[in-house]
Every structure is written in structure tokens, then in C-alpha cells.
Image (cartoon, rainbow, N blue to C red; front, top):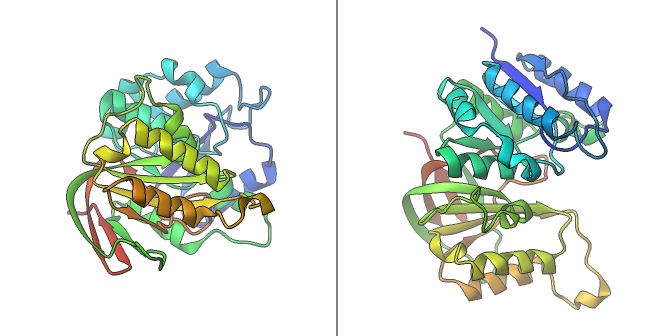
Length: 307
């Protein structure tokens, strides 16, 4: 029996209709049945419909009975409707077998759902940027991302491994057992501090990524997490891919590695790099709200949540 994917739009409006259609076609090619929400292509200013339209889409996704509820794209829009989400309804849908998957702005939904119910979701692709390849017709979706997605849908996913950047100060040995994995987009995550939608997780494994943020802004946001005590309460920080920024002559050698070096100097919590997740084609799927083990030997890191 084919697995069913439900596509809905809880955040920004889909402007690239070609990428949307290409994404749906790619999922069909991979053997999935795809249901598209009636308002998936709705538009109200920059959003995929007004707030009530997008809330209704979330709840239809929860009621769909699909194997995966996959967002069409990120952008911005979820933080402004967090008050209206019926979290227990979504959590019950997850208990029945619907996996909620997304990236970027979806972080707000994931953290709020976990804070309210403890339900587990997945950080992974969106339809357009993952399976529609962001409007680039000469490219095909990344095979690693697709394999990880298939592992999730089939219930075979057990973990992920990667090689850290080779830099002075890199973590070379680490064993963390039974720690809660959580995180997502750095900017979205930090924007939720001090709200009832921010989960209070101690002894966790926090993963972070971002796009279009200059290294000094990344450092500024990490400073907020440091000063709020969030980073100091974790057992490990996993830095994913930070893309889409441009250095200037004013930086005078200040770059992303400068931020990593600075962060390591501010905390005793191990800081790992080069996690294959973020606004890049080659990315793994990561659980939000699931306990896992983390093992580091030299540059090699393994995050394992299987039995």
C-alpha cells in the first residue's frame, strides 16, 4: 500500500508554482500518494492565506490520516498563529501515525507542540525547497535527503552520522546517552524565548541552522541563548549549515568560524560543527522531541535514536 503525503501551507505564500508542481510530481515518482490541501496555494499579502486559513490547514493536515504532513515552504507566519493551534488534536494525530515534517519557520510549530504536549515531530525538507529543488529545473532532489525521508516514512530511520569541520578546538571525544534532541532555525527558536511556547529542556542535544544571517547576527542570537541560560543547560550543541550570507571588507577576517571559536570560549558545553542539516540540498531528517545518543570519535559524529 502506498504511503500518503499531505501537503499544506502554514507559513509563507507559495510564489514558485513550478517548484510546487515539480515537488508533487517528484513525490509521485518516488511512489507516494500526494494529497494537496485546498488552500496550499492561497495568498494573503506575504502569507499562505490569512491566519484563520492557515490554522484550518494545520488542523486539516492533522485530520488527514496521512503518513506524513509536509509543509509546502517556510518563510514566516507560524509564530503569529501559535495561540490558535489545537495542540492536543495535532498530538493525537501523531499518536495515530501522522508524522509532521518541515524546516525553517516550521521550528515555531515544532517547539510549541513539544512545549504543550511533548509530541515528536521531524526537522527535514519542505516540498518546494526539498523535492521541488527551489525552482531550479536542471537539478534533481538530493538522494541523501530522499533516502532519509523514505527511512522516516517506512519507519526504518535510526540515526545519522557526519564528519565535523577540521578546526582547532573541535570536539574529538564525546558520549552522551538518552538526551532529548531538539532545535531548528536559530532565529525562529530565539524569537520564542520567554513565551509559553518555548520548551524548557535540560540536558538536551540542541541543533541549530540558519539562512541569510551574517555571522555577527548569528553570534548575537547565540549570545541571547547563552545569557538566557539555554545553551548552558544542554549536553551538546550541534551547529548545522549557516548559508546565504555575504562577508564584507568591514569584517576584517571575522567569519563564521570566528563565531564557532567564540562560542566554544563562552561555554563548557561541547559544540559540534558541520551537521548536515539546514537550507541546503544534502540534509538529513532530525527528530524534535526524541531521546538519542551522541558519540564522537575524532572528527566522526554519530547521533543515534534507533532501538
